[in-house]
Image 1 (cartoon, rainbow over the protein chains, first blue to last red):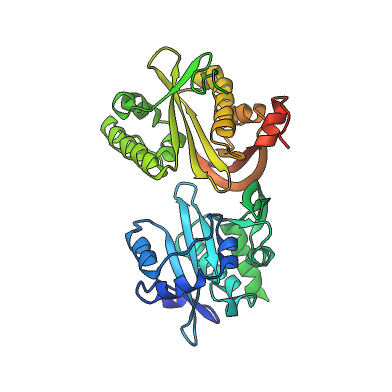
Image 2: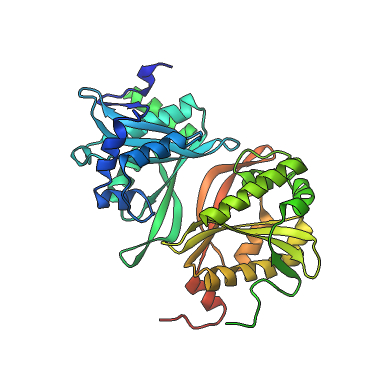
Length: 187
Length: 193
């Protein structure tokens, strides 16, 4: 496994640069629509120093990656595996394309494919889970393309804009993902 | 509203978990790996009494400071004998939602006290914590728990394939929830407009 393992056609996954990246991260959070699609916590602002402190003190097995363009090395988003169950061998993925100029162009899908390769071939996970708000059609399309299947809902789990919204749960099994890769290679 | 205790039922009463006094019993329960893995959110194993004392104490302190979990010992009414634990975790007050964890010392305790405890928990969750939604996750092998929560009106709303592992094989992970309006309907109460 080398750096190549984390490199796609247009982007790569890297560790966070704790000094520089948190400044950009703080900027993403100025976009409340981004936050409202990302998390069910009330949208909030955190300063770069506070983000830095939070990430530094987090002593967790979570795998947090920054998404960077290959050409310009521009930081455009993050992707993370968290909530590991090492007995049943699965974890939860969260992804955000913070830079609005890079949305709806397949960067999220590309990052997800790299992340799934890391999860299945690097960490030998057996499945990857995710939850997505029912109103986030752009993300749902991305996850379907990456091989995730719909596995049900969390009814009325989100309360925003004076309305109750469902969360959709999706999952992809290692065997399904590997079968997809075999097909892609055959094409 | 005042008069009927939230914490005292016919057979069971809810009190605080006392790590010093309850650790011996809780240590026994950790031979159920489903319980021990959920207790500390780590791969399950046997935990010694001294470990339970320390870790549960820390956990309760954190829950109190962060206000992110409510934990109760279920005791046989009028005694100090602990027969189970009920916990409301994953509290998201802005979404009015919480996850319930319910563990009994044995299948026998579940059969004897399950219905009363779930019914008390729903009253506590909807009427005291003002939740809109109470949810839980069960593994496909937990047949008695599945029956208990389905009897209480919970709806299976998701099924994550092979997301749980118990005694040598994979099971689907089953997501259940009950909404306040559904609970009230079951209680033959009118839903407030």
